[in-house]
Length: 107
Image (cartoon, rainbow, N blue to C red; front, side, top):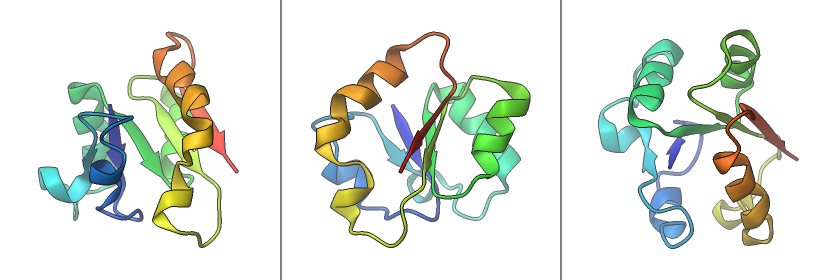
C-alpha cells in the first residue's frame, strides 16, 4: 500500500497497519541507502505509493506519471502520528484508489 521514505519514521508502517495494511519502510526492504531511482522502481514493481517529505518523488511523478503514486508530506517537524493523521484517512484511500491521480500533497 505505502512505502515510507528514509526521511520518515520506520515506525509508521506498524502504527498505521490497521488503516494501511501491507505498508513498508525503505529500511524493511533493504532500500535505506538506495537512490531515488531504485526506490521508485521498487515501489512501482510492488504496487506501493511512495510517501516522502522530499519533493524529489513529487517532481518525478510530474515528469513520469504513475506508477508509483507519490504522497508528498509538506508538514514541518511534527510527531509520527501527525504525518498521516487519521482524519485524512478517507482522502488518502480515495487517492490510492483513483486510477488517474498520481500525486497527493498533504500540508
